[in-house]
Length: 386
Ligand code: SAH
Ligand code: SF4
Image (tube, rainbow, N blue to C red; front, top):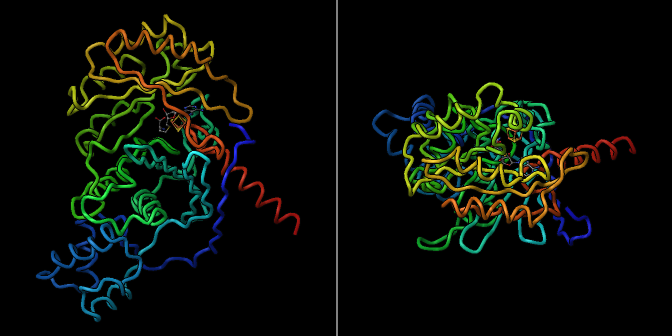
């Protein structure tokens, strides 16, 4: 991360919201939405149709005001407004990197903050979203891991990150056939998604619903550090693509890098991958592998890696380590990354190197805590100066 790169800070300051007293319609599964509408006085006969209409307004048109739901009669809109809210996380700041990456610092109930990152590429636009405030796990190369978990995000807060990005990118007015700006979702922001599986599942069901955000399950990738008992459930109940934060080829090293390995070791993790529902050559597992100089980047590591994953339809995503202040590791040299990648490639696995994106705004993988803390600190400093 080079502080000298040009950045376009674009700071939006949002006043703190009054306490929400009415339930938020965002984040309710279709069934819960129907129940909520009935409770508010919608007749059983009409509820299916009403829920469908409301759903389309929320997730296809992105409306934030009941008055914009113009195919509903005025008294019904008033009934909804009396009983419900349509709320998203507040955008505290939005930063735009010189490479077009956008990082949103979002405030959620309780004053907590999480980050989401939008990465535009030629053929796609990927939104990296968070599943928890902080993380209970303590991977030694990850800055988020040094931040204590504050809490799990709700389905509304998870799906809300997608809505916020689509608002910002002005993506609600797309005509059918237009290129989608948020075309892919990766659950690779703050937190371990499989320690919050139910909420992640409900949010992703909304993201995949054809009458709403309508993203194919193949365009959603969930990354886990290896919560083995939850992996099959993620496949069955969400059905999205799976990425495994693998990062080491011996238990000794993985215990240090990804301490959840002490609970579920490499053997158990590999078995869960073999058993992942839907696994096929067209739906491969991505093995993420952070390149740490002198720690896990030798030729022997590369050879062990391909042996370990033999038989699993897989691709390997090499992630050059993204440094953060005080990090105990260095990024492997480029020729080392290339040599590692060559071995993996020759064994028949695609092994793209993930280009660090948004480094100038600390938006790259594993950097997400720092900016938040810096922002917090500066706010505290500002207050102290007043
Ligand atoms: N908790 C989940 C998802 C979030 S992390 C998980 O661990 O899989 C997304 C990816 O970024 C993971 O593969 C993680 O190991 C990697 N990562 C974390 N810190 C990093 C850093 N400093 N440099 C590069 N990649 C990092
Ligand atoms: Fe948590 Fe993932 Fe970071 Fe590990 S790499 S501390 S699981 S966010």
